[in-house]
Length: 190
Image (cartoon, rainbow, N blue to C red; front, side):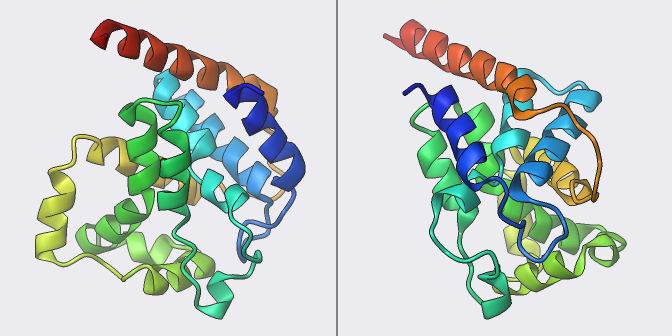
């Protein structure tokens, strides 16, 4: 099974689970984030990252309410480890860093914290809270920190009940382009 088929299957099998304590499903959340990226004019790799930023939630076996129980599912790390088998860092790094981006924004933008949903505030506590000055400086050294911050903003917006978006198949075109780019880059290095 190709990775595109695997992704489609993950959304088909697990996408209807609730997105933590939010009122949308994992699939609705992913589609809304990807649609925001597309409307923004993001490239295929960042749009694929927006679609797949929470793929770690679809890969683990923890309950939907793990955060309510004080469990950090480290979905960003699980997702990045799975994705790096198929994608360049332009996809995997924003996924890996999207939780860090929340911690960064809480530390650097006064109004950001007040805009978080109650579920995001709860998960922030489990994830380590806002960054300190040293962590801010370290995060800003990442070559993908700007993309991670943009992805984080789309992630935060992607919680609208009943919002109509294109379907998974529509966004899989970006996944295919990102995979093709990874293959071409790998071939060029050989």
